[in-house]
Length: 197
Image (cartoon, rainbow, N blue to C red; front, side, top):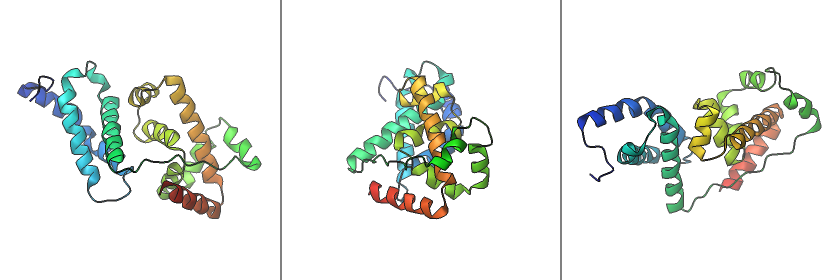
């Protein structure tokens, strides 16, 4: 192993204790970004864990292991995309229609939270995937992976204010999509899929 790699059995146990409980979440995170279900996400997870092991000694704050691991997963995923020349494209979101503006502008928990309660998991994921990548990624890390604003900022290498702004915009746009009639939603999904090809 290189000089950067931990060598003692104590280091290995600490690494396994820190990383092991997060493997399921990391695999789910990678799976949602891989279009084909051919086991590629498992290979990517293995690559990410191997990189994490090699860099374990460089992690100064062991309490920051979650954003650190997600950052490594993103790096592995980006390298995979580069190798396969399949860069994701940003998908424009439909403009806010006037009759949705009042609903989404509300800071009341009855806006997005109620929409999420009424929507199926499939509808929520489809709506999330139709957002521009930088918005969906920030919102997913915050809402699904339950990272704090600071952890999302650390994961993405962005100022915390930018992250907060992206999450706010993502929540508003997600609410717009979920309030659209089902036919408009399916059309937006088809456009999103076409644009990503």
